[in-house]
Length: 508
Image 1: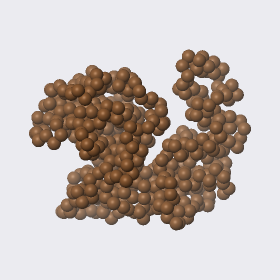
Image 2: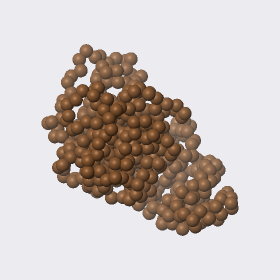
Image 3: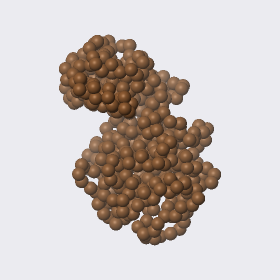
Image 4: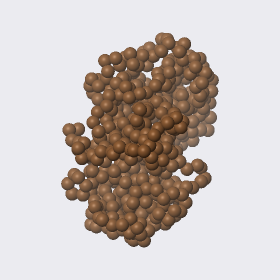
């Protein structure tokens, strides 16, 4: 497959960020995305971190331009064709690649005959990237392609304000303010804008929680976790611009779409996507700590994402954390006992969610049951959950293994974590490689004409915050929070709009 067609396919199949009509863009969108003269980018050239992995692989525009650079040189073009062939499972030519030892080639061939898989080429891929990261990367930095990348980075670093967006209806509310729909004027891309009222944050001493959520969202790049694309501020609020999820949350679907709960096939599909999301968080050493139906959102296509990372925390390698945080009825026994833990509360939370999706109520509290918090905590620590005939034997098995009171005996808490959970028989019909590549059809497709949330009139209004004054002492917090565009989501967004420019024009 030609590289240009390959990138186009990836954009069309995986990004899913644009509506078919460009009418959402401003008439001045070309002016808004106009690149500056290269002379304006010298400051960025001097300050940018020269990291091959970041500049040439992780950042979408940088990746595309580096590959264009390699495409212009026959010796490097072979490397790119190999990397693309690994991704697209096409015929591979390893023998003519630079610096790949014959021993590694022979090992790949031997393993390929026994168990064909993309993973067999991990060593070869690593060696090719190591080769590209040396002299080819140095040559790229002196090329017209790198200058074009700096022009895009200059545009990426321009200030973001409320005028960057059009603002639409209120979708709901968070802990510190409303969530509304918004649209980027330059691209037409729709987002959800989570507004954190400055006075409400200060009154509740929520600065560290808000900053923690923002920083964790910046670190995570997963199709199973909401993405942060922009941060900005107004006179009264700090704003997080996030992936818009028009399909509603799981709580709405469990309890407001007919009989409570889902059929097992649907519940297990969502559980598989949640498992992938937790795995992506754990790769960054992040424990989420607040898995519950209202925090799991559906997109237009019926896929789910984890949202609201306010209680998440990053755990340094080799360390543990302690903290009695979460939602009543979903906190794991070790959290309630204020014991140390790493990722065990999230596997407990997955067990609670699978149970609730199938049964139509949480394992330790009936829907709308009036009961004291202490009693719910006692049930979590002492009582065994019960199973109705809605559960298959495999569904009972995974719930029991995830809801083990002792984290040492809980599924996912030892060995390979998410890999072990994925191997449970309940997921026998889930191809996780295809799921992670966005190639599996969800069991439920939201109706684009329906609104899967409360009516705006039913959303409670926030009361006015009194007795709190904002002053210059708050500026340090605001400056840490308000950093504008987030590189990877922003580059994905503008890449589609500017595709022809990137492919056919590198003239400065």
